[in-house]
Length: 600
Image 1 (cartoon, one colour):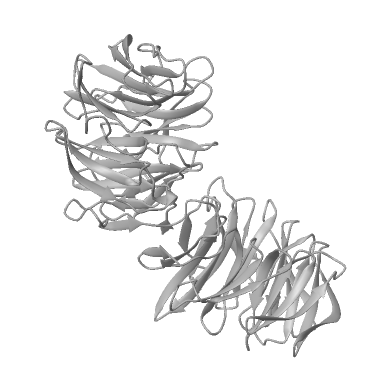
Image 2 (cartoon, helix red, strand yellow):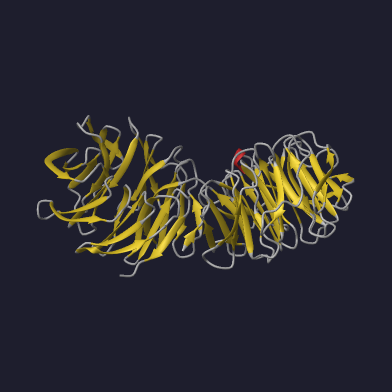
């Protein structure tokens, strides 16, 4: 199961969502990933991760069988949509620099690509050979948008940061004239599906409509201003009569083009994060993308409230944990912008906590015995959040002197926080003891299920054992040697074993009852291991590393292992957890969460 990331957005930059000509899917980009989702049931998702650099835009071919995606280095990949493997058909480098938009001709044979190249800002060529079918000239700054008329005779239009649009005839496509009606950057240009009209939208808040064949200006939507803010995206209705627009004034609008009137206005909120950066009109679905990364399904019958909002993470996820609540298993994930999300592990339905939470990266999360999510963050706090309420306000916050790196909880209200150069013991959400300058750099911590013993792994490659005595931590003087700087420690659920992973690609397991004697050593990772988790059966544990691998190990036999190759391709695994004995959850910097079924 894949719980996909949201679109990656940045302020003041339009975000392109691609539609499927068959009408079933839509797609967008985040980091090095292209995310394809079912438009009727967005929980069904697929992720394409073959780009070596950040992908900016992806568009379906009109045939529906291929997708063309372009990245910041100027690479264009054309790949198959019908198989799960998404085989690469062709790869081109039309220019050196960021690709910002892509357009196909209706026969799926020619592609126009625009962006910020060094000497040229666009190219148009045959999809199967790469040979040029015209020149894209007439602009002296980066081109933001391109579209091709989907009926013959072909026309091509571009929009640029030089405040102009340009009109081309072809093939071969030749520059005809410049359209200088806008006063600011032209963000989006789109032909109507029937080819009779095209529209241009700009940062000056205006939308102009032109004749699709001759390029003559017909009208300005809404007179002098279509929106109070810059317009980032426009999308035509399938019948070519209406236009959807998305704007930085935090609203989207539907226009009746021939009558030049607003049909509906969708107010999306009042914060900066409610600015609208992208939109798509597909079949009966109206989608818009907010600066928060959220995908809104707009409701024509009730413009004040979206039908549904797709949430998730748009930034890389650092940590996750799982918890059963009212018979359902939930996955909690925390990202590097401080945002915590919860997912229903069955359906993928998800939402974020309400109220004001962490303001910086969430480094580690766990759930204590009273059903509270304990999270530590780079904003120097540890938060206790009730999982029944899922609301930050009025909940426990412990302010620390130094930045915490890891937190572990035990029974009776105890929690141990490892900070930079400091170890803090919390009891019932209060600091009761701190160990300053322990003489080594503590990195990670685990509390024994019995609740009396604490294991702390250090950057010096050792694990030290402490015991909790009332309100103090006592060093037991026990030193367990790992093979390198310790990156994670975990006790098995029955408390019989302690697993330790390190930067030298090794997992070492110690036998707790036998005075922490070394039980076994597990080799297999090709790079630093960053996280581990015990299965509820206490027989198996999983480890994830910088080599993008996840291994599931068998305690009694280091040779028997389940290997998940490319768990999150091109992104290292940042955290993992078990839902039950056969279900493992992983996450990574690709901002997506995946569920795996493990069979031995």
